[in-house]
Amino acid sequence: MEQQIIVLLTTAMGLGFLHTVLGPDHYVPFIAIARARQWSTKKTAWITGICGLAHVGSSVVIGLFGIGLSIKLAQLEALEALRGSITGWLIIAFGLAYLVWGIRKAVTYHHREKVMDKLENDSGDSVKKTYKQLIPWMLFVVFIFGPCEPLIPVLMTPAAKVSTAGMILVAVVFGVVTVGTMLLLVLVPQFGLQKLRFPALKRYGHVLAGALILFCGVGIQFLGL
Image (cartoon, rainbow, N blue to C red; front, side, top):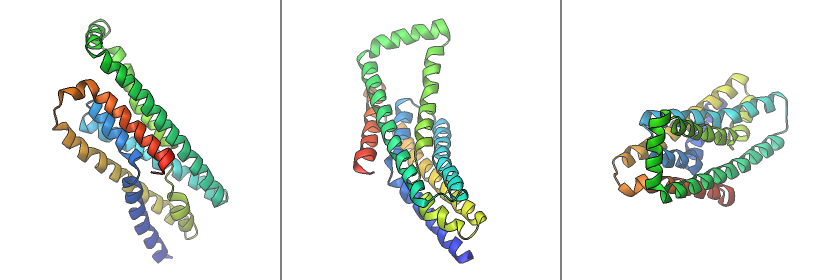
C-alpha cells in the first residue's frame, strides 16, 4: 500500500507541473495584467497564489464530496468538464471586456490622464481604487471555476482506495506543485518584463493584456489547451 502512495505522490508532482505548464490560463492572465497594471512582485505573487489555491481547492472539495458520497467517476469527470467549459468562456469574456476597455483607454489616453488627475485631487483616488480592486476578484472567480482535470480520476480516486490520509496527501502534493509552478511561471517573466521600458506600453499595455487573455481563452475553449 505504501508503494502505491509513493507512486501516486510521484505522479502527483509530475502532473501538477505538466498540467500547469501546458495550460496557459494558469499564468498568461497574471503576467499580462501584472505588466499592464504595474503590480509589484509581492502583489502579483499574492494574487497568483490565492487564485491557484482556489483553482486546486475547488477540485479537491468536489473530489472529497464525490468520493465520500460514492458518486460515479464518470459523473465527476462530466462535472469537471462542464467547469472547464465555463472557465473557458469566462476567460474569453474577461479578455474581451478587458480588451475593449483597453482600446477605449488607449484612444482617450491623454484626456483620461487629465480626468483621473482631477478625480485623484477631488476624491482621493477612490474611483481608481474601486476599479483596481475588482481585477483580483474577477481572476479569483475565473479560477475557482477552473478544474484540475487529472486530480480526481488519476490521483484522488486511486489514492482513496488505499487510505483517506493517502488521498489527502496526494491532493496536497498536487496542489503545492501546481501553485508553486504557477508562481514560477508568473514571477520569472514578470521580473524580466519589469526591466523593459517601452513608452507605448503605458498607453497600449491594457490592450495587449486583454488580447493575450482573450487568445488564451479561445485556445482553451476551442483548441483544447
